[in-house]
Length: 69
Image (tube, rainbow, N blue to C red; front, side):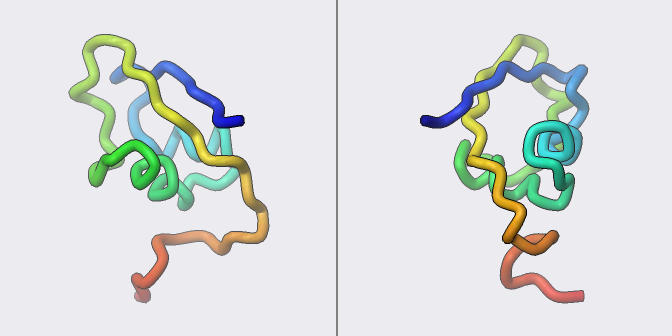
């Protein structure tokens, strides 16, 4: 069962949401992908917006897949 939370600009970014709910800020992209987003910035959300969260997965490495430094 998917978890849905409500976020506003006060939540700052998907980095913060991922750190709190998934235990890894670098997994923000999983939340973005699941919700059809491309930008981790939440500053434009004046009203509460529902976000579906993926299940926490400690086996995933940090970072965005396919992107190397």
